[in-house]
Image (cartoon, rainbow, N blue to C red; front, side, top):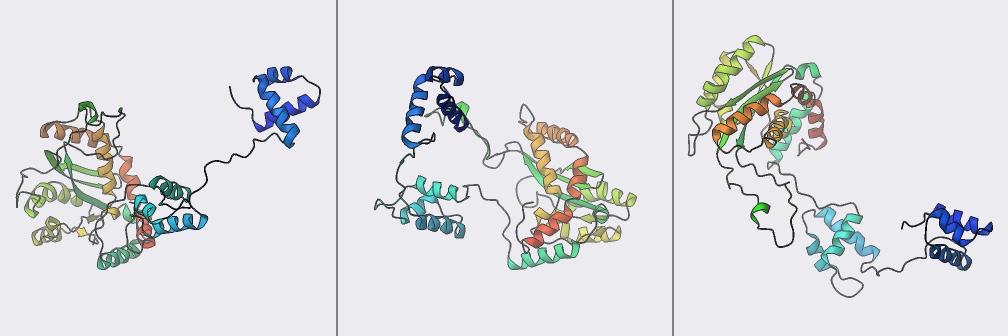
Length: 345
């Protein structure tokens, strides 16, 4: 049976004072008659219909200790609650528990989350990123609409998604139907190249002839033969006023690659090192991975993965590239706000 609200309690007392019987009031509010009797008794003794204060369990930390716990984790975010608990002696003259430290942190607004993973940025990297962002902050959307953003990304058959959860009973952690099996290196994979621009999507280009070992990855020669010659050069012959963007990977900065782009009259946008967050195509890869995660059954061979990738690529809305390109001003501003550091992109 539901508890009476504060307003219902006041109305019940008013009905009793007006001469109604406890039985009639209980029938009106659809509660037990003993509830009305206890409410009347409380009102006669205390003059109020509110619940009496509950004592509860005494707190084992003082307000000063609560502030110390909070500030220590603001200054050292990777410190665990157990480490803090061992250093705080509570009012019961013993170290507090990990759960107590966690509750104080949550009350202060801190949550236990997975840390974001980003490249290591040195002072030189941060300065270069900041300088680049400041130089492109005032670019209008019409200028960004003439930039072709490109990148490579690897897609594996075994995709390890750390956000997967399983509902299971105690003692069933290692049951076959509760275990996610994955290859330590992702299993067979494909290396893709793609490019996006305003109303433009090039790819996917699936590199051929790759394998394990030195020299069997994406080399400058493979980049020119499988990407630049068949895709990039024809595009810029039809869009001569566009600018080409690729990062500072070795196949992109090789002398042969630079000479080919220079001879073809393709303008290349300077790009700061270790700045994947500034390239909008990174979010395009995320959209592609989300499409692949919906494929049922999961690809089990490279041929299956090839077909799934091509189908998933076509399922991405064409408007997605325009939305990502329009985010460049916000990306530049985010880098400036972070003083060249990491951003949310």
